[in-house]
Length: 187
Ligand code: ADP
Image 1 (cartoon, rainbow, N blue to C red):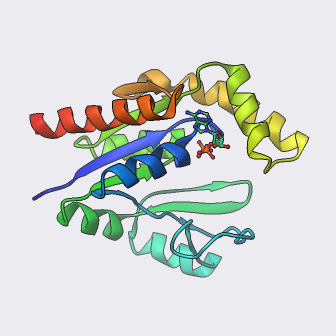
Image 2 (cartoon, rainbow, N blue to C red):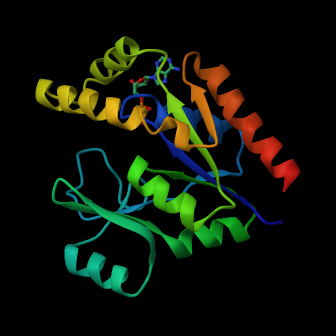
């Protein structure tokens, strides 16, 4: 059985990881496509789980060889979506999820019109700020940068096929699951 490609975006702190974790617990076919990055591994991160951490020469060689669906530089670090891992998951019939920024998502949508695209929205900017602060991972300057970026990112929400408000977690996960189920039935 052929799988389904899902493009999932939304501002930092909206709950992408939380939704994905909850959805994949309920539906074992859901697997995140692990991206490649040249940034330093943070404490608690696991190579091959959070990212495939590679050095710059390795990354650039892979890019040259056409290994990536899309890649980009953010704050001096390179990030990419690997083609082969994504294809392998789809061949296995998985629901392969790209957790991806807006810029990468627009590229991925153009290259993969078969993908279903979902933008996760916060119930409000106030709730988004509470979630970023509640996560306790960022200093004040980073929080302010994330909130500023969020406004720009939210302006791209209408470029996605679907928008889901992450208000109540179980409700939001249910909506994402039902969007994907409906899309699969039509395919
Ligand atoms: P992202 O992956 O989009 O950056 P996270 O999944 O890290 O966001 O979530 C940010 C914070 O918001 C976390 O502390 C998480 O527990 C919390 N959170 C996520 N979804 C919900 C929700 N539906 N209701 C309440 N809190 C949530």
